[in-house]
Length: 307
Image 1: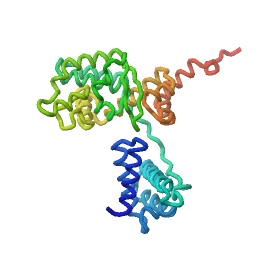
Image 2: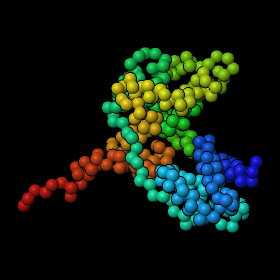
Image 3: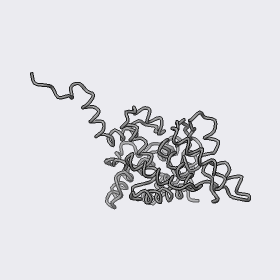
Image 4: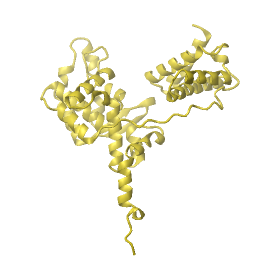
């Protein structure tokens, strides 16, 4: 292993052990650092501030989106901060390097009518597959879960919590999320047929741990399979499958809460956002609704009668 690859491996180990970075986060760091490592002539460990700025200019010229450039710079900040903290460098060359300005796109959302159409389409049949699919969409929409949180959800999570589920989110952070009666009914109906999806043989023991067990090697429904199921359900409900994904359901959960009057701090807690700035995007998504609320409720927003 080359010296610079050893440094990257040491950084990734630190991110995993000390900061609880997940597999997807570590893979993204590895890709971004490997891409940059080939750029500076002196090697990644000796890269200068000018090297980093020149790299970002090259990335911009190649057409890389500003958001992707900012993500790569963030990876470099973390990496060089690690080298500095470990006395492998006397400075952090990313200091004073500004991230490209990116306009944040508003998330895609589904209307309540769209969600009702999908739930109705999922429950159109009285089969184990239909009950599982109903449970999946109810939980994604009722709890605002990330697809990674739902895919490997342990069976024990839904038991003895008085209507709450304990979710382990990004960085290993835990949060309690309440489930409405509709989602709890869907879970109960699915549990009656869950055994239909358990594998036989040695894989059964592993699969029994998970709520959405599977006959696959992982023992649970993968993220890819969940995407496929939702795309198929969208088509059955008469919606464009390209506009439907687990994350879109998470956005719908948050947006509909804000439209219903929920405060941002509560929505932040339910979503598991570390920074409320991430949650504030939903005030923009729901801006039309919020304008109506303001004009209806604020005394100075009401039309005054002429004297």
